[in-house]
Length: 285
Image 1 (cartoon, rainbow, N blue to C red):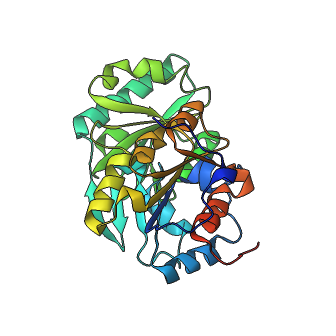
Image 2: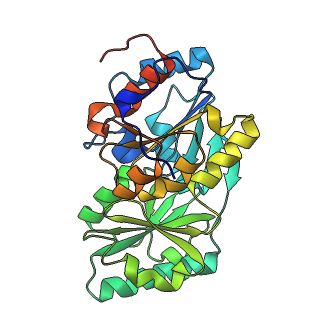
């Protein structure tokens, strides 16, 4: 455990960073879900220096690839909270759920909805995300994170490998949906990934495990890895890097776990930290 160091106390000399890994929502993206305007210029500067950039998110791979379309050459994507890792269209990591477990989860969510909890399940397949719930408010939330999406009558019968099951709860998920999933917590990970989202995955799957596999494959050490995160699904990922940053807006547990604190997502904290640590030329919006 490390005491977080404020951004202003970072070393002024350049450091040897070969891999930059960042969560998306609440971290790289602002509260409106928009990337920093100068992101693509910074990505170009990193590519010139041979530094790999890796988005790490609960979002599906198709959504992440779309966000970085045109600048994704050589980029590593840690998608679906670490259950799938892709580089240049080649899958490096896959940790799918047992279809029987996925079906049980879908049925559990149906039951919770019948009890009056305003929740819906997203079956996160490798090719598409699938939902039974089809009201406009729910699908608007799904569309933010799953651009490759299909509505189906029976989500227990989809023909796809399932990365994870995501649940969107219009209430506080940690207080309503999460406690109701105790039967799965004994055998699987039940991760509160934001105020309203919960992901259920294999115990072996998380962003940190995925990052360690990427480091191993690329010959990059934790000392050469820079990581940014803001929520509970980022904790293991922070442990895999010596340069671990919690955003100023992060969950208290994340602030306690990271070695350093970066400015908030609404203050371009990720890019400001990258520019300072790597001493990049000024890239203004």
